[in-house]
Image 1 (cartoon, rainbow, N blue to C red):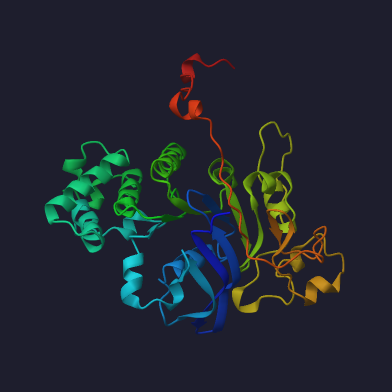
Image 2 (cartoon, rainbow, N blue to C red):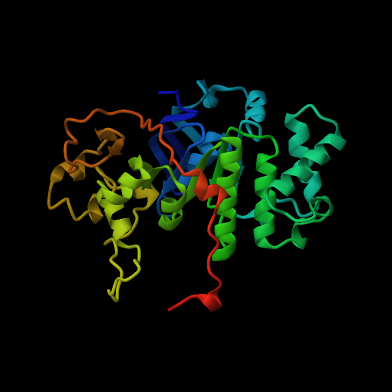
Length: 361
C-alpha cells in the first residue's frame, strides 16, 4: 500500500478563553491518500474546521495552542516546519476553500489581482504569465468570459460565482490536497450540485486529494470515498462510505443516519438524538457521548474510561466500548487507501435528466 499523502496522528488543539481553557480538538487521528475524498462529518462545534485550520497552521497563537500530535505531509511534520517553509506549503501543496467566499475575498481588489497574488507567490512566472494562469483557472471552473471577469470585484458576482472564484484561486497552483470547508454553505441546491460536480471533475483531471468538511450526509454519500465522524472534539468512527452507511458502529453515527429523512418513509416525525452537545469547557468524563447514548444502560465503563479509536475489522475504526470486538482490536491511525471506481461510460456519456414538463407522475 502506498503511503498516505497526509497523516494526522493524535492532534490536540487548545484555546485560552475568558472562562478558562477549552480543547476543541483532542487526539484526532486520520489520513488521506492521493486522489481520495475524505469527508469529515459532525455537528457544528465538534472540531471539524479547527482540525482543518490546524493542518495549515492557521490557528491564531494566542489564544490557540498546539498541545500535541503530528501532521505529516508526505513524511514531513508540518507542525515543526519554520514559518517560511510553511508559507510555501499553504496554497502550493495544500489549498483551502472557506465557508464564506464573500468574507474570504478582499472587496477592494479585483478577482484577477487576488488570484495573481497567489500564483506569483508560489510560481516563478511573470505578471503577464500569472494573469494567463488566472484566466485559465477561471475557465476551468466554468466561469464564462474569464478575461473580463478578471477585472471585476467580488461584489459584482453571485454567491455561486464567488465560490467558483475561490476554487479557481485554490487550484491555480495545482495543490496536492484541497481542503473544502463546507463549500456549499448558503448556496441553493442547484448551485450546490454544480460546485460539488465541479470539484469531482477537477479531482479526476488533476488527481488531487480532497478533505470535504460538511454536516450534510447526502453530500457525503454522493461525494466521499471514506468518512471520519467527529463528535465533541474527537474522531469516533472512520470507514469507507459504503461501510459507514450500511454498518454504522458508533451510536452517534447510528443516530445521525436515523435522523435523515428517506423517500417513501411515512413517519410524521424524524428520530432525534436525545440530549444536547456538551459544552467544550465542560466535557463529561469518559466517553463524551455517554450522557446521550442509548447503548450505555448504566455501564460505568463508558462514564469513566474514554475509548480509543480501534480497528474493529479491516478498514473500519470506531471509538466505542460496546462495538463488537472492540476490546480485542488494535489502536491504530486510520489508513484506508480506497477510492470509488466510476465506469468511464458514466463520465463520458452522462444521461441528461428529462425536462420537468415531460416527466411522468
